[in-house]
Image 1: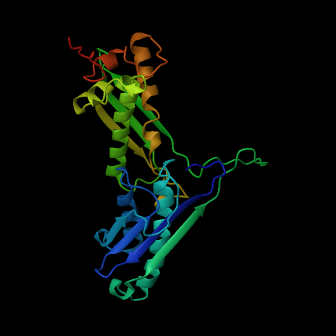
Image 2 (image 1 turned 180 degrees about the vertical axis):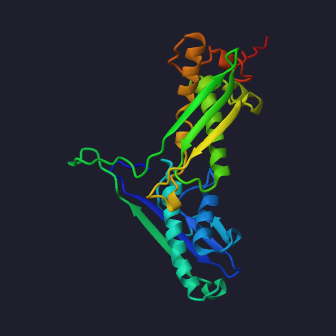
Image 3 (image 1 turned 90 degrees about the vertical axis):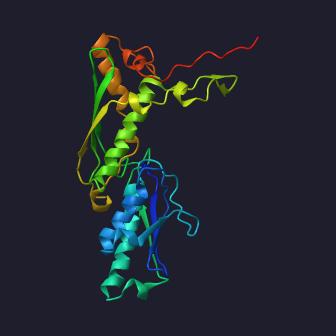
Amino acid sequence: GIGNGAKEWGMARLVVETDGTVSLYNGYTEMGQGLLTVLTQFASEVTGLPASVFIPKVDSTYALGCGQTTGSRATLFGGRAVKSAAEKMKADLNGQNGLKDLVGKVYAADVVIDDTTAPGAATKKIKTHTAFGYATQVCILDENGRVAKMLAAHDVGRAVNPALCEGQIEGSVHMGLGYALTEDLPCEDGMPVTFKLREIGVLRARDMPEVEVTLVEDPEPEGPFGAKGVGEIGLVPTAGAVANALALFDGERRMTLPMKDSPAAQAMSVGRIRPKRTGK
């Protein structure tokens, strides 16, 4: 979460439709991280209904103002709201009602999280964020200094969907390696000198090393079913791990990113900006 005294929200609406589906609205955005999948899992787990019944949506039908999808908070806060709304639906289903009897009903949950300490607050017990996750990564270089393997161990709370969670971390390592070694956006007169992803330095699949992910499941009491979520933390350790491995490899401590002068960067197929051709 954002924390530091900010009030944060999870908001959800479950709407029973005439076609036997349940529209699942929430206030956070799906951007490829698998959020809508895990929210569907939460709703299915609570209600006992098949996951295929729930149709996740993010639109302006309801004013679900949760703020930006940032701070690695959508799974925890959005999940708490979906779980709460689903519990209300479950109570009606337990009353011997079927979905056809609940058509048109809206199950709402607005969950406020206000458990962190504002800067400067007069208190001896400080809590900066609702939940905390920890991670470590190890970079292994081969005899030529090329990145041969990355190890990534991440404390994610309960891994609600392990495959999605591992995929997110693998993608983060990909981004982190580019950040560490090859990605750059030089500009002249306010304009990028190139618009080619290869020259900007985004890693190709052939440049990726083996990535071994270890999910450390330390359930979070504040999270839905113990989940914390994993977002920015997947990217944070990568550059430091690569820099440490390079320092051990050639004795040079590099302090500026990207480390294009390193043997690890030179082994990549991207990140070289070709000179512009000049016509006669």
